[in-house]
Each structure stands twice: as structure tokens, then as C-alpha cells.
Image (cartoon, rainbow, N blue to C red):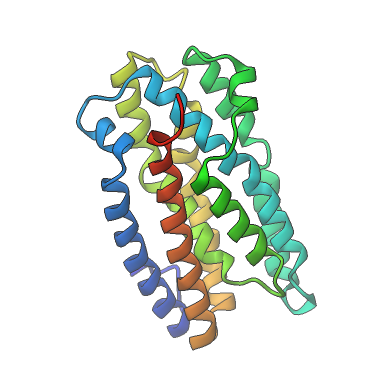
Length: 229
């Protein structure tokens, strides 16, 4: 249990989020493209397809974060400020991802024109809906999953991808950046847990959103193998 979360309510919420994360890891272990990465069968084409599908979530992320910030009322002005700052830091991350796609041998227009897959559509719709609700503190659950990916997995994925495609790090800058910076973002989430998790209702909402986002994020990755090449 992190000593960065100090209230009893925050600790209970964090414990629940950790259980959701462990289940999310199990879901990811069953995703075909990630299985190929783990088993050294990952190809250059796999990587380009992965980036194409991730871009949709990345480019929409700042939109739902900003929308969520606008939904916080006066009593949550400090939370709104933290969420706006988070959106400011990440709203152009998709440009780094596009540059990685080009460095991996893709055409920039191809990734720009790529459509959302079924999982990306569902994730975007759910996040925009939740972000539009009054005082959407449950978005912390979504951020826990998405920022946790960068903190816990991005560096390992980047290392494995470079080994698979014979890269030198020039095509995995997006993942390496998040591997280095998302721990700071998680620190902000710990502070938010203490601030907004005041009881059972908030805890249940945060954990529910974390579970939904975990499932939809895994679906987004599963759909890579169901979409036309």
C-alpha cells in the first residue's frame, strides 16, 4: 500500500484499484498482439498496426480529460486545476506517436487516416459520457488504468519492440517517454484519491470506471487482430 495515500477512505480505494489492475494485467496477457510480443513473434507490421490503433485513444484522451475538468463544480476547483494541467501536458502526445510510426516505416497520412476500432469506439464513448457528468471523480479510475500502463509496462514494451524490429529507440519514443514520466502522473492520482474518495459511493464509482476502462482498453488491443491489415 502506498504511503502517498494517507486517509482511510483513500487507502481503501487504492486497495480496490490495485485489485482492478491485477485483473487488467490478466486481460492483457490474453491479447494476441501482446502474446506475440512476449513470445518473440512480434513483427514490424505488428508494431505499425499497434501504433495506428493506439493513436485513436491517445488523440481523444486530452478531449475527455478536458471535458471532465469542465464538469467539476466550484467545490472541486483544485481538482479541476490538476486535471487541466494533466490535459495540457499530454494533449499533443499523438504527434510523438505519429513520429514513431514514420520511424517504423509507416506513412504519416496512413496513421492520421486510421479509423477507431470497435474497442476504441466503445472506450471513447464511455469516457466522453462519464466526463460530462457533474463532478466526475470516477475518472480517477480511468486515469489509474491508462497512466498505469505507461508507468508499469511502457518501458518493457519499448525494450521488447526494439529487440523485435531491430530498433535503436528512435521508433519507441512515445512509450519510453511515458515509461519515464507516468510515475509522476500517478503521484498526482494518489493525491486525488485522498481528496475525492470520501466514502463508499465515491469508492464504488471510481472502481467501476476503472473496471470498465480496463476491459475496453483490452478490447481495443484485441481488435487489432480483427481489423483489416
